[in-house]
Picture 1 (cartoon, rainbow, N blue to C red):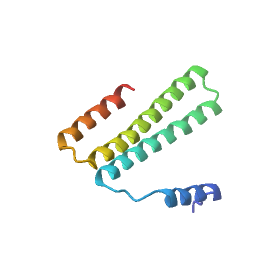
Picture 2: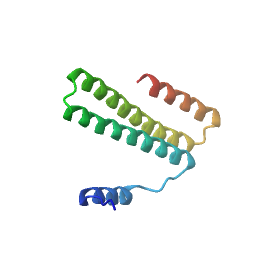
Picture 3: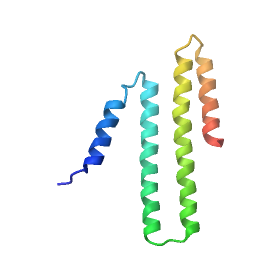
Length: 112
């Protein structure tokens, strides 16, 4: 039977206590997406540690670090997009504004 370390259990408990309940379907979808992205990044970072422990060439490690950093940036932009979308959806602006903000955030995610 697998057991978690006290540090992991504390971190999970703190995360559950600090996480507010999703306020909308849109937010819940974004949170799910960001969580999935962060889990992939976590795997990338574990892979980086393995590469270093195996003595892989610095250039290979640097390339993977760059990929993990870019993935983290995209997760950040996705989270910020959620914030913008919530602000717009809470206003009296029409659906067209919401679509334009979605389009703009996709462009930001793609090129930033």
